[in-house]
Image (cartoon, rainbow, N blue to C red):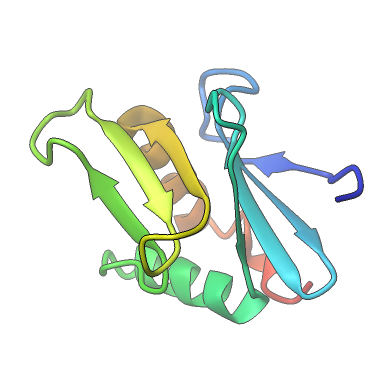
Length: 115
């Protein structure tokens, strides 16, 4: 994959260690710069748009699965992955996920849907 131009939410208070979004023709990519696995979740622009719409509405973010394990622990890892059990899993923490969601709600990633 060519060198991507990654964007992070302006709400991320931890420098470059945040969830990042980039685009290539026909795909939107999501990664976490401090994830030791260097996983990149790839979605279609339509699927990414569905994710943005769900997060803005505080709804379950289909087609992406987001798990907080354990669910009631604010320090628990957050895992973001596509449907099914195969494929990339991006791991972050609750603070970085919340910063990403704030950026989504502010419209910071809307332009990726039209990519």
